Amino acid sequence: MKWRRYGDVAFALLVTVVVTVEGAALLLIVRAAVVGLDGQVDATGLRNALVGGILVSALGLLTLAGFVLVYHAMSARQAEIRRRERIDWTDRWIEVLLAGAKPPASRITPGARDALIELRTLLRGAQAHRLDELMRSYAIDRELLAQLSSHRLPRRLDALESLASAALPSTFEPVLSLLADDEAAIRLAAARAAARTLSLMAPGAERDRAAVALAIALERSALPKGTVQEAILLTNESCPALLERILERPSPAVLRPAIEAIGKLRLPAFAEVIARFADSEDPEIRAAVLRAFAGLGRLPFRSAPALRRSFDDPVDYIRVQAAHAGYLLPPAVAIPSLVTLLTDPSWWARKAAGGALLRLGDPGVRALRDTAAGSADPYAREMASRVLADAGIAEHELTSAEAI
Amino acid sequence: VSRILVIDDDPMVRRVLSMLLGSAGHSVDAVGRVDAGREMLATGSHDLVLLDLNLRDGNGFDLLTYAREDLRLTVPVIIFSGMQQEANVLRGLGHGAVDFVAKPFDPQAVVDLVARWTGVRHASDP
Image 1 (tube, one colour):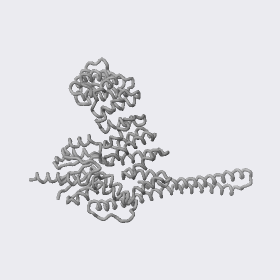
Image 2 (image 1 turned 90 degrees about the vertical axis):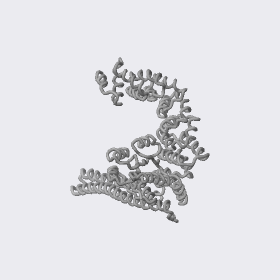
Image 3 (image 1 turned 60 degrees about the horizontal axis):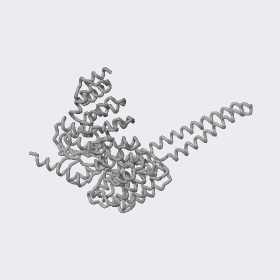
Image 4 (image 1 turned 135 degrees about the vertical axis):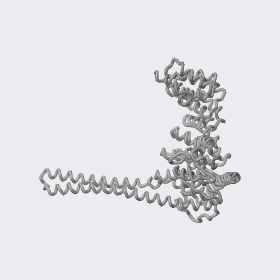
């Protein structure tokens, strides 16, 4: 409901007026009381001042309450009108696309524009290109870019949201420049819009150049790492140039999000490249690399020693990630380390080790059974029993957990 | 004329698919809620189901399981899924879906896919 983003200025003005009037009324009451104590105002005058002050306060509160109620009633009605207009225009645009109906010749309404953009988010292929042509013919890109220069934050955010949905290549560079905006919310919305636009660009040199530009802009944007990761994920696997640029010139602002994204997007082509960072001094980077290996389901040959070292890392969340990725090692190497990790002080490391043993199949299950039955460490017995029970492999072993 | 059931919580998707498949000569029922989907499935009168996996009030897998295990329907089900949801797609195929369409979708590809599966169905009918 875009309409409800607005009205803040009117409400702030109204509150200012009401508070000012109530303040003035309070001053009058105080003045009347002080003068009354000196005997210069009789009881009737005092009572009138008091009643007048209370009435003004009540009126002020009623005005505020009335504004809020009317605002909500109006915005609900406005939203409904917009919804109907959007549905109507959606049908008309679909007819233009599928039935060859003639598109409107003149300037289109905001509802028609929204429907066109929303439809664009659903479709790809030839019909999506046709929608792009329509958007260009109505100068929607220019209209939205002009809206970006508004001094109102909601209008700028609305424009960026629409630009993200429209994903028109002609808007990429102006949107990218907003990653240096002073307003964090604008930088966030611009990162999303630029990433989405990039993800829908046709493969080729232009897209690769845009990917490099986005990588540089993200490095300089001072956005939180989670937001950077979201932007990288939004570009999808269709944009390796972005990840290549980040990994070639790693910067602390974007390296970890890029490694995480590689694991989430499952891009095995990058496994060897991220292996370079397996011994990073930054534990967050080391953990991200291990998480990515686990996500990819692939461990580069030269990273096996780093993974084995990580089983003994002093940082507990590194050991957790190492345990998760442990199943990627040959069973003969992985099982002794994972069984040792079942005695780890961290519950999460023990749990991850149990899960990894399970993923190793029969030899791992045997190691879990042996641990559950005969480990000297009660916590290892408990975790091994729990993992087996959760997997439905053994029901009775939980009794050893009760011994703790 | 094949009868197609569309189950998707996005009204825009329902509209586009209804008009798209309608213009291709099919009869389309489109619903956006899980309970409405269950009711429609229970009629057993559709030749093909297009099912979104991420419904607002439930899960497409549950509907797929309901169709296959409770109702014992053999109607072909094509799942709709967002990008980066390979795991969901594989799970859907494992639950008895016959194919999948990634969103955003190419309208012509959907028409072709529907023609293929309704054609297969008709060809195998007695």
